[in-house]
Amino acid sequence: QVQLVESGGGLVQAGGSLRLSCAASGRTFSSYHMGWFRQAPGNEREFVASIRWIGGSTSYADSVKGRFTISRDNAKNTVYLQMNMLRPEDTAVYYCAARVVTTMSYNYWGQGTQVTVSS
Image (tube, rainbow, N blue to C red; front, side, top):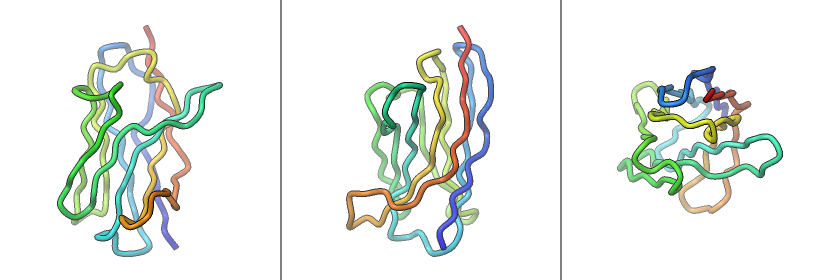
């Protein structure tokens, strides 16, 4: 059973930084893409960033390029999202997700962590 547990959310002023963590367990993730998504009130869930567990290739939404960085620690089975220069429009619940690299759909989701950016 795959488990993804996010942490690190909170309240921060515009221009500040937060680092989200996603602790993954339940299997070997070497064949997985790990992703971060977010959902603001009234909006659909949107892609933020992803990383391939092996090789570390990354992808970002245009809205976060240059401000957010996704990374992983293989030894700790943990994926991070470093968020800098935060804006009020980054306010959302952030979700960690996992998918097998041969599929397009994320099959496993964490419970989410709230990020609130005040102006």
